[in-house]
Length: 469
Image 1 (cartoon, rainbow, N blue to C red):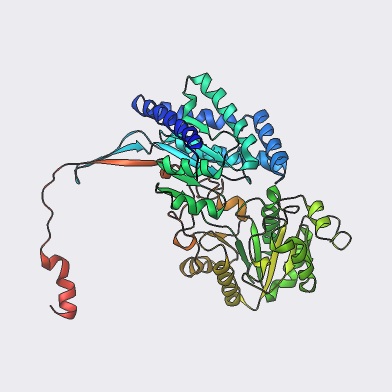
Image 2: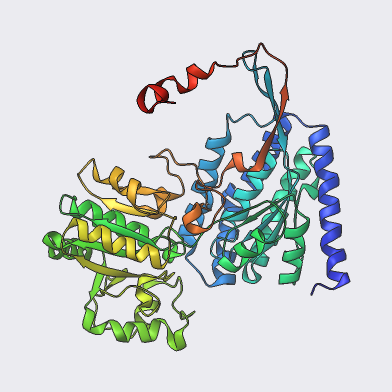
């Protein structure tokens, strides 16, 4: 249960946020919203501050690596600012004489955002920018390990706000030590709950009584078919798998390779630093990766040399190994390699042919990761569409480095985001990348127009002609 004191702390934060948001909206304009969003973006993108945030993120959480955190903070924020640059989020959006409807952009109010330790700067910055762009206030609830990073980010944002005369209460966080009760109270009081991270937090958001946007579990499976450019596929998979030590929910967790190109692909993967662990040694890897049935925190998102040492692979894999792939054919709760690993480890499945590869992928997603995304390396233009019609996934990423492409890239049309909705398959309310449109609502003014009532024959004529009345 939440104590009265805890209630008062969170209640006071939300009250201040509501007051700040009311002024932000009442005295708002597109220019003001845009300026606030730009201030928040520069707070994380300014190179010296970006490096500070990246260094603190790695030292505080023990996850990922500094160079990739810097890249992520920069590119994700730059891409988001590109996406929202021309977006209209204030005033009259449309005025249609034919329908008599005028649409007006309106903020949601106060956003309560729960953010993960895997991206303790980039994810909250993304949420803050989207919230401000649409005229909202936002309160962050960071993971315990991400508290310091969130505090630093807010310090930088508030410094930028001071330059433009904006109200600091538009962007706040639950002060440490935050508790689950504090987070739950925030979710209950906010006008919209946005949750990225553990599925427990997502379920709490959906059951809070507040409109919620939560995202599903990742467990990306990628197919390499017999038509693929194997060298290009291996290069892209390696770049994606090793980025930020595989902290992304969009990192490859399973590779499904068609038998006719299996050996050639393994050779291509080896050239990119991917070391093969044969199926006979898989039980030893599983025992070290999941001691006592729980994912080993000593290997989660750690550098390759640390991973290799912890898994007892030193001296058995090449010195230039960047990640490992473990042969397996098991799928399901009794086969942990088939799930998300948050480390530089991928499961490797050998499929008889392409149809078998699709079947294996479907089974992996049924176990974990349904709705999120899959990858396909192929030269066949029809296969991606067929996958999109039949596999329970919201995204089919074609011939791309998966973790760069799924959350938006300068070379594809997806919105830049760190939170991927997984539709009904993942138990989510959205099937898109979380982006600015999810932080805004619309008011419609409806005027009378001349009647447009059809005759019954206009609607049912063809049906009656076919089957009778």
